[in-house]
Image 1 (cartoon, rainbow, N blue to C red):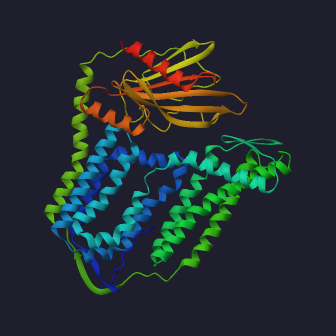
Image 2: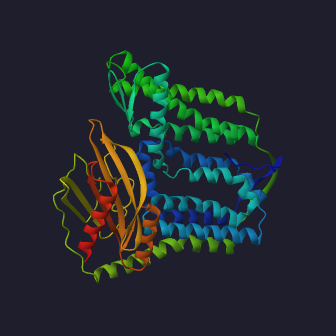
Length: 496
């Protein structure tokens, strides 16, 4: 959905700005970039390194153009104390959210907080009327944050479901196990690249722009955006079906390897062109107000500007002070020497982690079945070294697919501990039972949000600056209850 102002005037004044006020805005913008440089760097690096977010490179310049296009909004400024208080409160919440994101190493929280600051600055300095007219460009700027990769497994699931349905409609025999699709001619894997997330994000971005620039009716905007979300998902399922079907009729001589990529891109370009043509059905002559010969000066109240400047600078200042306190606290602690045992594999499985300080594995026999334990320890965390991150995974998704996933509860030492239970299968028929959870201080949890919260509190208390990931895996003959019980006992013995 896009945001527009329903009370846009038919005629507006031309906006001018005094050099002193322009200098103040330029200074604050420079300060914002400088104070949060590392976070900006992470955002831009992700744009260029992740193919999922390549489209986001264009969002920031387009947002600036959209603000310039609606610069008449500054002439409509109606400042009030309520707007100033609410805007500054929002700016303060953004600064606090940024601090929490830094302490918990949640990049998305840091980046959303950072990109929301211009919105609250506009609200506090120029008022609600100006904000209403500039709401879409400021919201669009927030979309430049690289976020949404958590949707990939769900989109893989939808793609696999749609592919199976379409194959059955054309009477192609198919057996599905997880994200593996077996037809008589061969085996297909619905990999992460097949989820269609790049196509979905790109079309949503294009759709938002079209809805904002060309469609006036809110009902039409909603209808168009719903179609822009649904069509790419269905189209991606169709693309996957076509690849499998071509493999079926060609006896795996086509639609594999390089052909697979070429056919996929051609299909996506075709669907994008159809969406652009389809969008013209919703156009309803949306226009900007006419600019009159009268001019209005853009003014920046000094007190509001100074308050905004102090709040924006408070978050980096707090992190600087915390960093010095953390260094002092770590220097007074006895840190164990880094030690990693030889990493044991079980049926070719192991967790995928990086940047850890210690990695230990142990094996144990339970009723003749081998159980392997993995303990991955982080003494401290940093931007490229953290316990919970998208790159740290319980399994290699290129090798294993999830046949079953549950969050279960186990009563241990008069406490109810939640843990994650997975059944993993690979392409050659191997299956394993896996349980895992995280430990921060003396607390266990399988909830990432709770773990991040525990980490923030531990860091503020200058206690535990990292945490552990604990895994246990075995065959299907060893139940998840037995696995988690033995895993917790092993950890308790180490802690005593």
